[in-house]
Image (cartoon, rainbow, N blue to C red; front, side):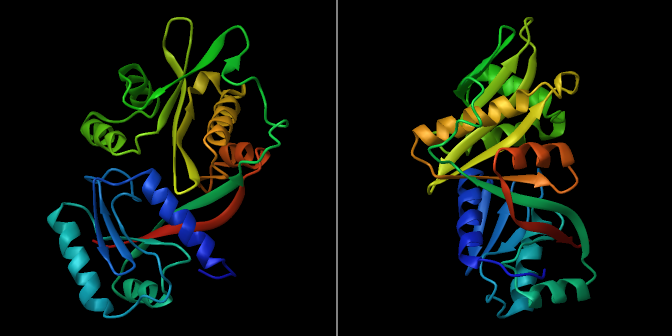
Amino acid sequence: MSGSFDFTEIYRLEEGLFANRPALESVTDKSWVWRFAKGYTGRANSLQSLDVGDAGDLEARLSQHWARSREYGIRPRFRVTPLASPKIITALENQGFTRESNTLVMAAPVGDDLAGLHAGQGELGAKHKIICTPVRDSQWRRAILELEEVSDQDRSTFLLLLDKLPQQAIGLGIYDKRGAPIGAAYASHVKNIGSVFALIVSRSYRGQGLGRHMMVYVFNWLKLAGIHQVALQVVADNKPAIGLYSSLGFCEMYKYYYLVGE
């Protein structure tokens, strides 16, 4: 990766995002973190570095982590952020690792002036209302599983990952008059960084501002909790989502991608 980065800020955001969305298992190796979640999502099933200067004893350390990955039945995968040493990237490319995915990390301040965001906290006119519950609420879990289209194979892992979320995490749900879910998201905050995940609206209800309403709710919830910054991840080619987040004050902080082996 090229460009000028504030490594201290990126480290703080990475640390916050890790804490807000834990994997099922993590192994720390100096500044490297290997994470495992039964293959569900790349971020939770990859090796990453939190210090651009940590590239010592590369071959042995990489070999050890890839052996663990294979033992757990996941492909060797390195998550490349600006905190990854170029030496690691070169070594993996020389080993035939191939590039996959392209994701943005965006962040926004949670300031005192939310006037431009307000849409009536929780209220969506006469038809719909945001319902906020703990992420352990059974109705909300059914909603997020349906809207995220989580496969039967990944269902148990997804629920285990929800159980690992910080205690204060919340689930947001929007339902139609029949009680069917039409929008959902979840959010938490750790280390003065808020995070929002899986913001999704049913295809037939998109373009009606429901996603914006949920984001406004998250901003207000974080403000009441005394949190000053919110971060999220979005696939780089998801233009509608990026447009929404940009309109709410989010700016791109950095990108990441994966180098994947066999």
